[in-house]
Amino acid sequence: MNRLIMAVLSVTILMTAKSGYAELLWPVGDSGNGHYYELVEEQDITWEQAKIAAENSYNSLGWQGHLATITTQAEQDFLGSTTFLGSSINIYGDIIWIGAYQTPPSPEIDGSLDWHWVTGEAWDFTYWDTGEPGNSSLENYAVMKADTWNYGKWNDCVNNQQAIGSNTEAYIIEYEPAASVPEPSAMALFLFGTVWIAKNIKRRMK
Image 1 (cartoon, helix red, strand yellow):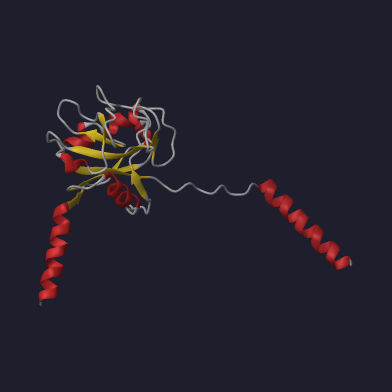
Image 2 (cartoon, one colour):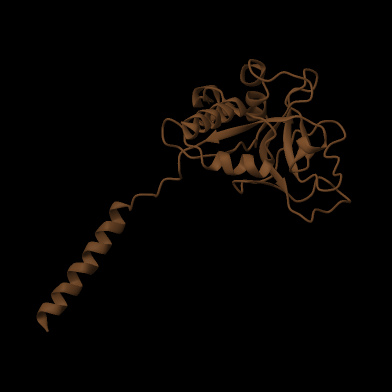
């Protein structure tokens, strides 16, 4: 009986701590990339924990997730819009982890250096808030702000940002299909077949 009560309490705590919103498609027809995005609220989650959670998530199509990588202004506008964020998180101080990190030990002289996306995509678009990245000690992870007056702007934070007084309540998962393996061309199949036949003919003639 006690074990049953403990199990129910554990599930209740997990459901309270973590809450995901419906996946939202960025349609190709709207100049999107065809990927799905999900906003997940989880109290006091670190960037590293959010990264692991995202990469262990799969959507209804079986696509694996990762922390969102924002590589164009159009994608930033989509994710930073009130359509995506406004119906869920809109409280002063809330920040949302995205898939950007700075290679430690980072050069403290210029905080804009050595930033990367978790997917390895090119780092050629940014949306930092004014004066950011501040590049204080150990601020090697990026968040999207959800304040009403700087919606969607980025800031650099430490891994356990909530431990120093700022709310870290969410992260964005981006789901995309796995890279498809190109099918062999007809010519490649023909050449392979020709070589295979020639080898077998030689073997029989010996």
